[in-house]
Length: 79
Image (cartoon, rainbow, N blue to C red; front, top):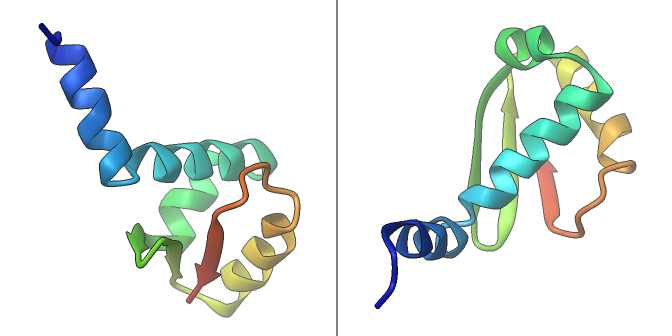
């Protein structure tokens, strides 16, 4: 019998939520949390790619610089 924790873990992996959280943590390490709240509208998964929507061109530029240093190999697109 599966525990609730295992079931929730499977759902999160299916929806790629774990990859979104990992990406947010890596961005926070590279910059800070204020940057995330101030300059990023949304982070979501679409067709096996992580999409990051930004509010300004400066944020997009900064994230493109950081994107090369991220550990995971998921495709990341910055809008």
